[in-house]
Image (cartoon, rainbow, N blue to C red; front, side, top):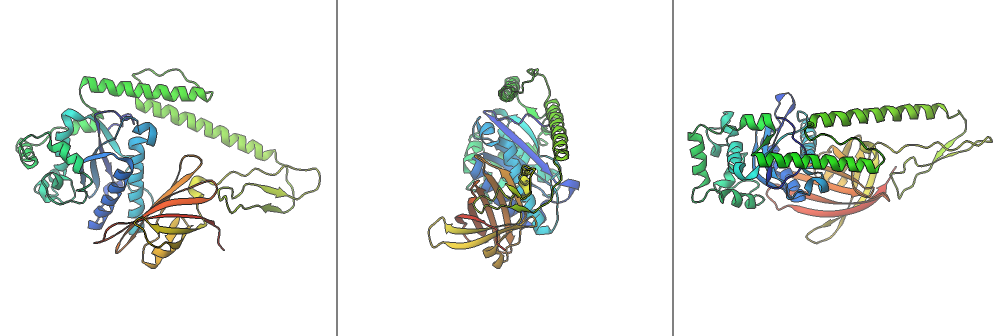
Length: 423
């Protein structure tokens, strides 16, 4: 499937697929499907997108969703940020559970940008027919890990989270039931949408395709204007320029800047004279970002300026740190203390460790106003714990914990704490 422009558009749907590397299974047992459902709930609540249909299959999945408004791409990163978070969170869960490392999904997710009005109903059917097409079931009702059950009024994991979408889809059928609609499609031999979705990347009428083109050109122009404000301006790209070419240009520019930075760093290093004497590293407890902020050099004249150390890489900034936090139930009640540890690329909660929750991989990314954001998901025989927090430059951590135990209502907590180096 070609990669369409990562833009949002009114009355447009994203049809998304993502496959496991080497055609391995990404869902091995019922608890894996349930873990993915929990992540869908989390990201749907966070980004407010509409989820019209899904099919979770052993080696891949299909999603049909719509962004909440045209500003989503500019405000929150849009479809790219949603899918990156969803796939990376599930990868951490899967790798932690099955003792594996590395990527789980085959490259980036694939998308088709589709005009909503004429295709919404057909696309839900297309998604729901996938298990039968792959001989995983004798009919859409027999496969438990699609949203088909929602539309025929059977209980399913995301039922209350997809009620609005269900009403929209059923409203397109008039007096006909969704089950009747699907039976008619099966009798007619299915839907011939595969080639359009997999090869074209954009599916819709002429007016829709023109809007997609105009939106993409507008986005490119804004990026150029932004670059111009930073003192870098390139000639305006022609509307017909392919997205792949744009990506290639950006990659080459990035490579060039990287090489220049490395050359400059090497030149700077060669200009620093050798010196003896003890170097004392000052640690600031309140600001864990400045792990190597200053270096005091005790030497006799001639005086040499202190060496400027770079900050740790983003993925390593939490490594080796401990945090004392206070957990407060969102529903009210007594608070409790906990210690969070980031060590050897793993996250551990002292409290949950006693309850047999496994250590987990964690992700770190940049947030606004100099903050960093980390998140992870721990698993245990009795449930799932989803953590997410941001850390201010002054070393203050604030976050939320959702504790989901089988057969019990979800327990949500807020927490805050400070960096503590420990022993």
